[in-house]
Image (cartoon, one colour):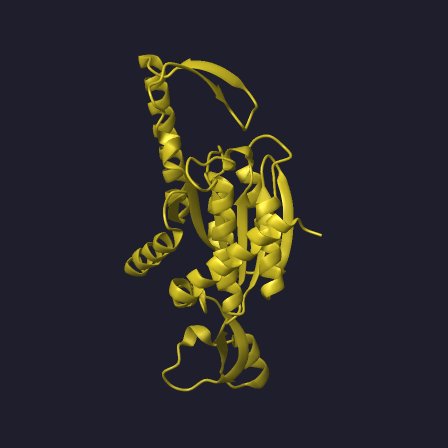
Length: 291
């Protein structure tokens, strides 16, 4: 049995995400992700005006009549969520942690997929793959996904995003839609991301908190790295620390930007302080303009 407070949290997220899907996301999701693939249906006789590139020459040789391959639009997709549950996700300076935002965004995407009859699965990771939920349909499955995202934690230090992307590629045999929910504080994942994006429609959802870029000048403080467990005293007022922190942020942003651009992966950035429903709408509107 789940604790009552967790059940309440799951129900609250389900109600919230279902409202977001019903109000703003369902039509957007369908128009952007449904029917992007095609699957072979049957052969039909060639008629003047058909594209000769669609002639199946082997089948035509057997029947001695030119035959065209007929395709049907794929109406069912497999949606897969790759969700970062590393220690850095347990940060938030306002009402929500990045991990809670990941659970809510995962719930929105799972609900949208379920709403249109798609299967949805999840892979959570930290320094290793933590949990895999095979793709399925239905409301009970969506509730399970929300519950698992709320309760998944890091058991291994670090953020092995590259390994998670590779694992998802092995699991997803057919073309589908993959959402990567992470703060992307990781290294050496660009090759794996590019490989995954060649086959699938990949969207990066970068979860961040505005406080991560702002450290107040308050003198000596003890900083703790949740990824490694290391502690370090720093002087936040010193020039050396300010210079290092600015260089760290610049390098992180450039690495993330280059990895996504090189893989032709679209980015949706969401702050823990903002309304993610509005952020999703802005993303789809921008995506429509680009398409």
